[in-house]
Amino acid sequence: MSSQVKQIKKGIPRQQTLSIGKRVLLLVLVWCVQSFYIPTSNRTFGGIEPKLPIDVFPVWAIWVVPYVLCYLVWISMALWAIFKMDDHLFRSLIAAALITCTLAVSTFIFLPTYVRAEHIPGSDFASRLLNFIHQNGGRYNAFPSGHVYITVLLALFYNLWYPRYKFYWILLPVIIAFSTLFTHQHYIVDVVGGIVVAWVGYYCGLLWARFFPFPEHQENGQLMRPPF
Image 1 (cartoon, rainbow, N blue to C red):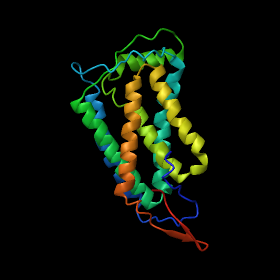
Image 2: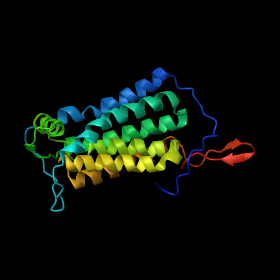
Image 3: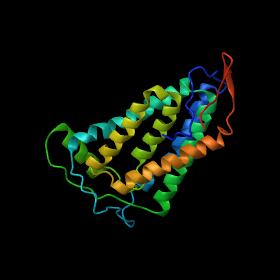
Image 4: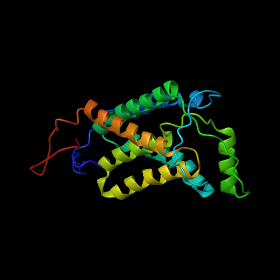
């Protein structure tokens, strides 16, 4: 995380003027943009396969577990933000998510990329689940990785919100990134693209929400500043 970003302190007075209904609607708006992923992931022709010579990760079926469980993680983090995140940071998160998803969806439409489906051997649960995903899931929208940019974006904002758990906000995207590679759902360039798109959206979201110049807060006679 950038050293230029000041961490949010627990003592900063929290503002809760956005109703739960408005927060839900804002997240639904983000989902509407991200939902373009579904039709574009089912292309049947065209596009490029962004595979590089360094893409040498073997298939490791057990990694399908974090790959699938990340959906529950996203939902949990979104719900926690709806009920607990202060208005300023929540607005910044929404702006960042809209920018990130718009950039990603635009790439899916104008620069279609795909990953080849594979037959995953094995009769254990993880192998059968991964084989089902490969044979029935859309193979397009490889670049940038949606698993990566959504996870990274959430981790960045949660790091601002709960800086004491920084280790976990770093570990989470790392695990998800490896899960996309070991399941052969993405290539290395897709992971890198997901990280870049998330960071662009993150900083644009902070700027849009006017997190800088630093608004000042005062607690116990000391000036405190929110991030960026």
